Length: 489
Image 1: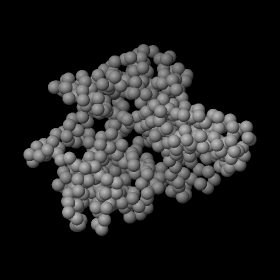
Image 2: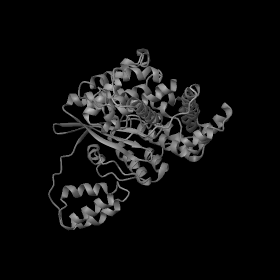
Image 3: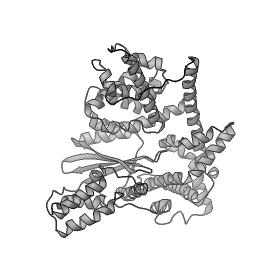
Image 4: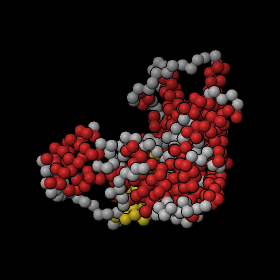
């Protein structure tokens, strides 16, 4: 499809119909696409015809840049507070390891107060670091390079966000972790340190789990590790397997910690040894230092075992439930497009409302069994047609399983940004319904002040249109909430 689009623009260029504004966009994205070099011919053709025309907007002014540290999947959110004349907006981009610029979008703001409110809401949902604007070019450059190396296509929204970040001409950076660390420490401060000082910086990593909230996501649970752990017969053997797996993934962790060092190096009001500690650990991993000699991996190993144990208990409970009934899990036909909406026709329930409800069930502070959450959802629902109720229940469990998988993969809520306002409102209605109706699942004692504020926003969005402000915030809060409370289980 990209090749076909490029061919189409090539025909336009031959007819001298590519205006200057469009040409400037094509020149920008040339370096962002796996097949971007294919644009060279049409760009040369268009330039020979001396293009003109098209509206080139005034530049944006970037007032503030915020970013989260990378989580355990290598995902990170970057936000820019921007204005252009009387127009105000918040620009957002998400970097994910192996995907480059995974997502990018613009949150329009009606006023300075609206912009301030949106930023405050974002800060309530995730821990953000204020950084200088100089952070953006290297961070985005290495993200683009990572994506291109894996053949990933930069999200289209980045064409809008890049000029707002002031990096419209950013190019992909290569060179792996060594190049990333060179960008972190261009003056070579770490190289000038004594071995004793470098060792103390590495030792400081034992404090990272208490200093950085994002550390709650630093664990491993991929299929390869899970398969290997099936052979473990003791806690000691399980620890050995996890340690070996972490050793194999040392390059990935070096990248996460080097990216963190780059953030802290450009951060405001950050102690100098903060970035140096992360950079020293990343360098040590690159140099081959054993992970057992790097304190933070003790916490990562223990957290990995805790998460795996919690998931194993969930799987055991599910299996035990079927065994107690003397039944094999039934084969359920996959949901057909539009099937659930058709089955629910005439009832007050909507498919997106059900998804919101099930999401609240899955990430709740306290576990709720199907018997506890199913009745409040289905109460008062009458469905006509033979077998329709059973089919609805089958689809509910299919959606429950799919959402549970999204929780496990750290991707819960990722689809919310693309929901139209009415469907998003139905989702928030279902989420709020679960919080209010499932007894004991969302006890107030388990909620922080920030959690309560986000829940109030969700409750308000069920009756008011808050889609432009709340949709961008929810995925990160849902993912962090799921991680936090699943660890406690």
